[in-house]
Image 1 (cartoon, rainbow, N blue to C red):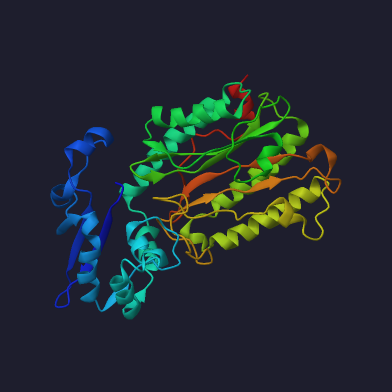
Image 2: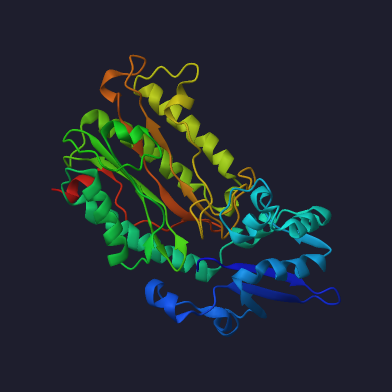
Length: 374
C-alpha cells in the first residue's frame, strides 16, 4: 500500500497501545485512473487500526503523538535516504516546512527501532514458515523446469523464471533476478540479463518468488548445453559438497552461527581448490569466494538488516546457504577453470535436530541436472 505511515503509541497509564494508520483517502476520480484505495475507514475496519487519518495530515498528527511521547523509536533521521513520508518529514530538505516536527524530534529521546523490529521478525512462526515453503516449492519447480530447456539468451531465461514463479503459485518475484551466462556470473549482482548464452559455458540464475509477502532465495548454476565439462563438474561438485556440509549444520543443536558455518565453508572450499591444483596462498580465497555464506531471510531478502551473524542459530530462523566460486580470467589460476562463476544457494529453516530445506524442488545434483536434458 503506497503512501502509508503507521505509528504505535504506548499508553502512559497501562500496558496498552494505540495503532495509528495514515493512508490515502478514497477519491473516485483518482481511483478511476490509478485503481482502488482502501481509504481511512478500511484502515480501521480491515487493518484494525485504532485511529486513521489522511496521509496529507500526518505532520499535524505526528506533532501531537511525538509531543506526548517520553521516547520515540524510529529509524528515520535527517541523514536517512528513505523515500517514506515519515523520513522526508525529518529530512534536512523538509526542515523549513516541518521545523516544529524536526525540532521536536531533536528534543525527544530517540532510539532506533531496528533492533525491536529485527527481534519481531527473527523467529518465524509455523504460518510464516508455511508461506516460505510454498514460495520455495513453487520457485524450485520453476528452476527445474528451466533446466529442462535449451536457452540462447539471458533475457528469455529471466522471463521464463519470473513467469513460472507466478504460474506455480507465487504472487510475484522476490527480487530482481540475476541471470548470468559465462563470465557474467563473476559479477555477483549482475542484473542486466541481456547477453547471449553460449554452449560450453555455464549459466548462473539467482532468483525466487514471493508468496504472502514471504520470499525465497535460490541460485542454481548449470551448463548451457545440458552437459558439464570435466573441469566444470569438478568445480561444481566442490561447491556442492561444501553447501551440503554447511546445510547440515543449520540446526539449533549444532550451536553454530552463520559466521562459524562461513568459516567451515572457507576451509572446505580451500581444501577442495588445493586438490584441484589452485595456488591458495595470499588472498586467493578472498578473491575466489568474496561474499558471506548466507544471510537471514523472511519478509525481505535481507530480512533483519544489521542482525549479528555471530550468534548461534535458533529454531525458526530462516537463512540462505550459498557458497560460490568466481575464477578470474588471469594467469594466476588454472587455465581450464578461468572465467567460471558458480554459486549454489538454498533457503533453509533452522530446526532443532535437522534443517528444513525450503527449496528442495530445485534440482542440483550433476546427474539430475544432466538427466533433465537427457
